[in-house]
Length: 130
Length: 497
Ligand SMILES: Nc1ncnc2c1ncn2[C@@H]1O[C@H](COP(=O)(O)OP(=O)(O)OP(=O)(O)O)[C@@H](O)[C@H]1O
Image: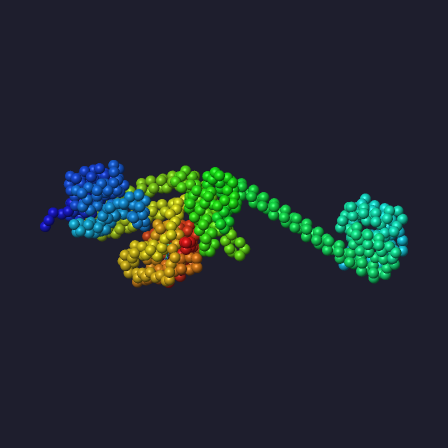
């Protein structure tokens, strides 16, 4: 059996990081963590994760910027990214990104709070695509 | 006809005076007689008596009838004088009539002749009076109009809101100082100039053109937020443009009312910044709690008992309710502050409804509810805010699923109806008791019975939907029968071309 994929979880709220970590570890993924955007970028470069879960609202570089930076870098632009959004639930993410005035190339979006089954489903889909 | 006519007889012959008096009194006239011109003039000029008819002898001692005539006509041109003459003096009668006397009667005369001549005189007098009344009335109504006009222009000129009226060719025909001030128009006067020459904001010019161009716009009022000239973001105006119709319902021009909303916008911005902050502060910890509950409940933090699991599920539902409440509150306050309908554009409602439909489909499936979307005929676009519409229809469809029964159905139909696009969301669910219907659109109002108790909700959805639909000049109605189902009907005005 091969090595389990490594997932980087970046969020400024330690409780959220912790719970997402447990959801993923429960499925035997290897999880590493970071608590702001800059640390997230650093960990990406050090650890080369197979997938990144990024919160949108963070101090020291928000999730959008981190996402944009990684997607612009040929060394990392093939790592799938899931953005954690805290948008009013009914309104689709597209309008949110439109409002922010930029095109975000994240591979998926998940509204907070995260449902374990939903998260695992989306992660599986993105990793299988590899 | 002769009744109540006031008659003065000036004749030196008592026989004539008495005769006239006797004959005419019988007809209901009031008759006075004097024996010479001086006495007659005295009655009229000094004593201020007025008579309808004057019977005047031309040949009298003292001042002559002719002189009396001259004197009387210099005071009152409308007096009706009937000259009494002898046979020999018909020429002088003619002369008197040239001076303005109305008629003459020759002595001796029969009672009938007198009656005829006097009756004609009285008829003339009545006509004269009517003409006079009409003239007075006309004068008065002209005065009224002038007064009304000046009153309206005073009102308009005093208004803080700008008023701008154009004719059918988009030429400015009326405006107040506030309008030129708000729109920052400098080259005054602008009366009779075309709107596009004077107004720098092309959206306003376009709105007026739209209002004037189509028959359909008769029912439409265009409401938009503009800045005085494009690019400037110091001042914000709300401009409401509507057609001015004549009695036959044809478009005669347009009227635009301009309201300065700069301050409102600033306050709104502050309010929404504040709300965004608060909501983030609230949402973040609740999200965290919810996620942690999920982890524990999922057994990812160690085994839990069945009882604990049930409690955790319930706790998760409660936190979910809180999160929904925060979302809804954010929506309500944004609707209250009127910032919602800023992005009105021509949209195809069907696409919006389809999206909402797809969004809710999985939930319907889980609950074993059959959904169907039907459209009939061509559907013109509506003028609306996309996000708002998604909000409305997601909520309606969500309700139709939430308050349904196992194996129930939901049908959504779209069709064109008069000036509106009509959407019906019909379900075969639990329905709403009649006593709850009147309050169903109230905020936080929820039906409380055994069937709805287990359904999570805030009671805000419908009130938000109503707020949004009405802000789009549409209507929303609900029909329901307990145990049978519910239909919510939304009418939205078609976009004008
Ligand atoms: N299709 C329907 N069938 C039966 N009852 C309904 C239907 N739609 C609404 N109701 C009743 O009207 C009430 C108010 O609905 P509303 O959408 O405003 O709030 P809600 O569903 O309680 O909460 P939410 O804001 O989360 O949608 C509901 O609680 C329900 O009792």
